[in-house]
Amino acid sequence: GAVVSQHPSWVICKSGTSVKIECRSLDFQATTMFWYRQFPKQSLMLMATSNEGSKATYEQGVEKDKFLINHASLTLSTLTVTSAHPEDSSFYICSARDHGAASYEQYFGPGTRLTVT
Amino acid sequence: AQSVAQPEDQVNVAEGNPLTVKCTYSVSGNPYLFWYVQYPNRGLQFLLKYITGDNLVKGSYGFEAEFNKSQTSFHLKKPSALVSDSALYFCAVRGTGGGNKLTFGTGTQLKVEL
Image 1 (cartoon, one colour):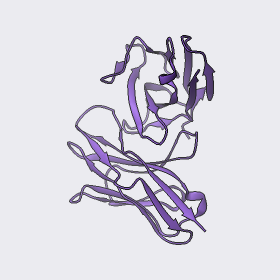
Image 2 (cartoon, one colour; image 1 turned 45 degrees about the vertical axis):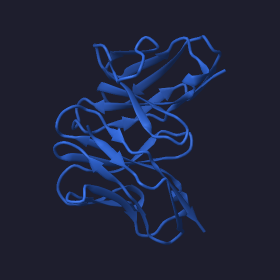
Image 3 (cartoon, helix red, strand yellow; image 1 turned 90 degrees about the vertical axis):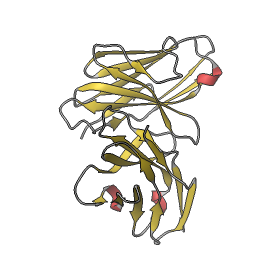
Image 4 (cartoon, rainbow over the protein chains, first blue to last red; image 1 turned 180 degrees about the horizontal axis):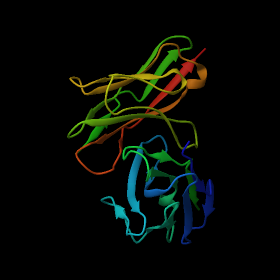
């Protein structure tokens, strides 16, 4: 089946530093990847939609200069949290859409726990 | 705009009893409906989906859901709950009117007790 991985699974960084999270589709090509953010005991909130080879589309209220998204290949998208602050601490989940499958199929990664101290 | 409502923050059920987790939706066009389960500090695992066809959809781990167009509902059910079913369940919808976005409900914590 379609597998999406994320790296790292958890990361702790100091306030003011930047951290990069990778999202990979392991056995399929993903023209579109999605980045979500989840606060404790809350739902997933879509941050941005990433299309291979083009700029990401950010949801209203998400700072594009703070959350840099790069989708340079059909199997890799990265989310960089720049100048991280404690309020950026959250669970970040990516999902990927299989280029060769129906448009409604989305496969989710295991998530990355970010803690900013 | 599309939306999903999961009216119950938590559902408690005894092991062996049937369970229902409720979901209603609002979307333009025909809906694509999904149920996902999330265990602590893990990503989402797909349970089942409704795209078209039979209103009763069967999914993983003995779960099923019934699409009811008139009531705009897609409740998740299981005839006999297991303690291992205890987790956070999300309903999600995507409209066929355009766009790729999935909209999630707020989640329902299912607790199955012995």
